[in-house]
Image 1 (tube, rainbow, N blue to C red):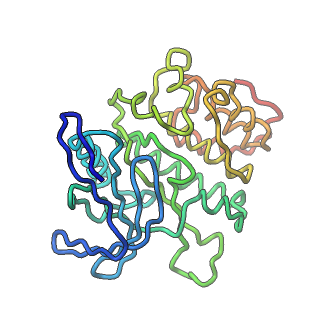
Image 2: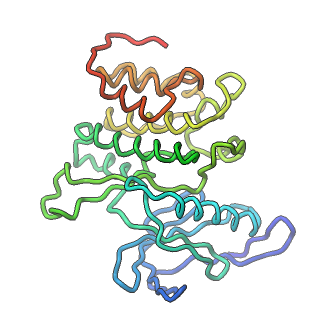
Length: 296
């Protein structure tokens, strides 16, 4: 694939092929099947010299310059290196190979979205475990002054515990937050450009004058959308009009307590009235009071 950058120079992006062996820094990574495709990257199975099961994330040029693509790769790599937390995917390596940028991370069985679509496990019974994991990851990110910016059902990876893998009990499933390709530091003002092609756009990106300037609570909003889908047991796709008309919050209010209160507050359109921190959200999810109606 020949790609031309903004200065008119061309460079050749070459995605890997199955069975390809890439050696870098004394380690050989063998590429397996392609298992995912997103707007910014493709994802492939891979293994290293020790037989560790990993994934190779390959950045895909989207009519941007080589320099811009490299900068994006450097930002994500630096973010992953600096963020070490049990609820976040871990980086093994990052390198450029034949004008193509790779990030190697740990591999998981599937995404939370896959589990929801297969409907083989009652995820509603795991809502507290899932929310605790994701909110702890968000809490860590925000305390590290990082905003994830792209939390959705397919960026949450799942795997069975190795303690008793034959049982495959729902309780043995672990969850981790992944994909930091468009994460930003809290001081970064570049939100609207990043979200120009998102499938679900939060209200403060649609109309910042009306709903407020984007801040870390954008992660709270997106995590609440994830929990909403788990509690309803199905995937939701909201248009900009749905978001402006407050459809996610209206759906949240139909849930039983305390989820109605917790999710409705987190899905408030106006930034200044939304749940402020991941820990506050966690406390709201664990309230024992029964709310018959909630108004914000």
